[in-house]
Amino acid sequence: MSEANSSRFHRLLVTGGAGFIGSCFVRDTLARRDGTTIIVLDKLTYAGNRANLAPAEADPEQAARLRFVVGDIADPAVVSPLTAEVDAVVNFAAESHVDRSILDPDAFLRTDVTGVHVLLEACRAEQERAAGGERAAPPRFLQVSTDEVYGSVETGQSREDDRLEPRSPYSAAKAGGELLARSYFVTYGLDVVVTRGSNTYGPYHHPEKLIPLFITNAIDDQHLPLYGDGLQRRDWLHVADHAGAIGRVLEHGTSGQIYNVAGGNERSNREVVAALLAQLGKPWSLVRQVEDRPGHDRRYAMDSSKLSALGWTNGVRFEDGLAATVDWYRENQDWWRAIKSGEWDAYYRRQYGERLAGSSEAP
Ligand code: NAD
Ligand code: DAU
Image 1 (spheres, rainbow, N blue to C red):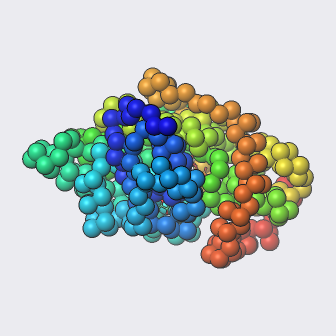
Image 2 (tube, rainbow, N blue to C red; image 1 turned 90 degrees about the horizontal axis):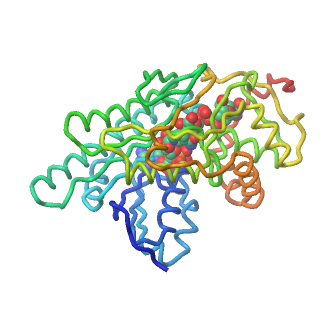
Image 3 (spheres, rainbow, N blue to C red; image 1 turned 60 degrees about the vertical axis):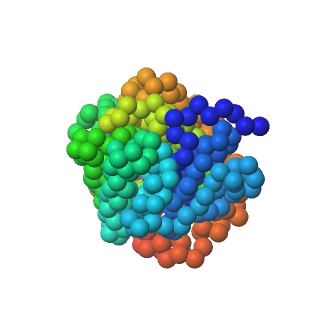
């Protein structure tokens, strides 16, 4: 059954829509059945996975409103014609893993900075077409950014106008991307909004990240490599809540503004690991204390009252979301076992080989 489309933006270009959060946004938007059409542009890097869109592609009504284009956001020849077809661009595409940014920063600059620039230029060209009467309105551009741009926050909560102090190649590149986006609002009057989300978890999360890595390793009784003392703190946000917040900012955010998206679930890594092991019925003895991540941010925390004022509330309790996530990984082993093969072995050896060899049992 279709619902009335109350959205301001009926045709979306969703970049990085085959990744973890982008695919959730695409699935949830199409599942509204309100006529919204989506073009996904995704390079299908190691992190992109068409299977993440399988639920939408298996539904004929949703599949008819979804077009998938394999391509690079840093390629203007691909980006320009797609941007001409849509009312808004939602940019999830990024290299997203801090550890990989420490091993190989180059791709982070190309996608997270140059890629954003190419998307912005395409939107600016569409703005000019709108001014010339060739299209009804210029596109809105939503840049999906991260709490990591604030750097490590020892106490208190970051607010949107706090100083940016990114400390890893990943977070520095993300800061570059969102600053460019904001500069296009200030300089060219482009309709730009930015979200800064906190640590996200849930189904379809690539197993390189803490929660899915530790769940899948524990299912296989493999060691869990905990960095340093494991007392670093993150604020966990369920992927459906993150995607919902992005939808709300897209619809209701004020042009030129930035919105924090907090989870409201601050936990130490040790607490998270203990909770997921308890859920799986696996022992703490699987956890190994390994050499820390260089430049490891100790804590992230944000105030998201600005987003709350747009009517957004966080729906998933962390304990419920984690339990459901553990169940999802138990029930979808084909999905993650396919990812934990091929390129994965070389990455795992490079990232964890020496660390695990020199590790000790975590206290
Ligand atoms: P992800 O790594 O799971 O997905 C990224 C997607 O982008 C993949 O599908 C990949 O193929 C695609 N991609 C990469 N480079 C591309 C390029 N040059 N052109 C086109 N597509 C490309 O990432 P995620 O965890 O879903 O994160 C999505 C966005 O949200 C990112 O911008 C990230 O910085 C941001 N973010 C993530 C979190 C988190 O905890 N995961 C939190 C806050 C913000
Ligand atoms: O805060 C938002 C960010 O959250 C996003 O912008 C990033 O895209 C996303 O990857 C995530 O970054 P983190 O570095 O916080 O996530 P990660 O899952 O890699 O690590 C979470 C914490 O767990 C961090 O303190 C490092 C630690 N960790 C991680 C891994 C992969 C370990 O102790 N061992 C590990 O093997």
